[in-house]
Length: 332
Ligand code: SF4
Ligand code: MG
Image 1 (cartoon, rainbow, N blue to C red):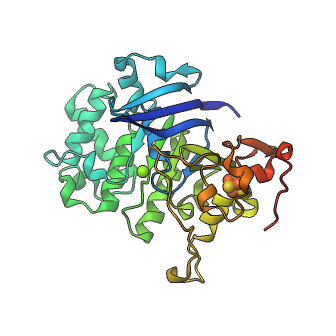
Image 2 (image 1 turned 180 degrees about the vertical axis):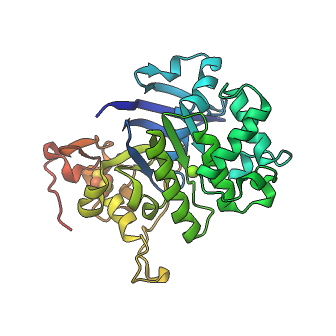
């Protein structure tokens, strides 16, 4: 498959006083054309900072992309001028967030905002043309009365409807990649499923790829092709969705799977991983998951384990799977 996005050894740090928070600390990831890749991890794992780094939306200072490369179809985004990058945003990569209200302007109608966006990206020539196109776009994302919806203001819409508007705006410029950061976290379960379905269908219609950021494995259980698990600013497991749900190897992934709600269980009985994500300005020595890992041994605290390909296409950062360390893979 053809590679669309290639991130190599990305490091994004935040300089706060005399502390350095290594929010993203050596991330590698690929998104192929037509693929949906999910980055999963608890809050504070560095997944949002990874996506903001790809978009070059890191507040600088205190943030800084220290090293690494981000290539879209071979073009290094980190080497582009600010102006070139502004064109990439929207045209080539679009992003949707958890709370659409923060990206929508409360003062203007939905139609005006979509028209504005289309004008800015030169997809239409006049505001009138933009408004007509807005109706069409809203119909595509499931608004039955789109002629009315364009005249409404964001606050008149429900959270799910606002997210549909954001998806319409994101897709209006036919981007190659849609980055979605917790797009359904603020929505109730039924609406959540509808939005995920919509994302999947627009992805297919526009032949784009999706990079999905979520703390909830349940959200990506349906739509992701590949899942990357992130912890302490690093990818700790990278494999196909099927492998992740049937043969997860990293102890942290096991913990995430164990804390997933199932239909039979009620939420109270869930096992969750004890302890908290380490702060990015004070990672433990060695494996960053060691303080929470039930398999931790002395060797784990020596150095950060490498991300190794333990089976074709299945990468794990854990010494249990590191032959050279003499560790033995556990079965569970
Ligand atoms: Fe646990 Fe050690 Fe593996 Fe880290 S390297 S996940 S502490 S077993
Ligand atoms: Mg986040």
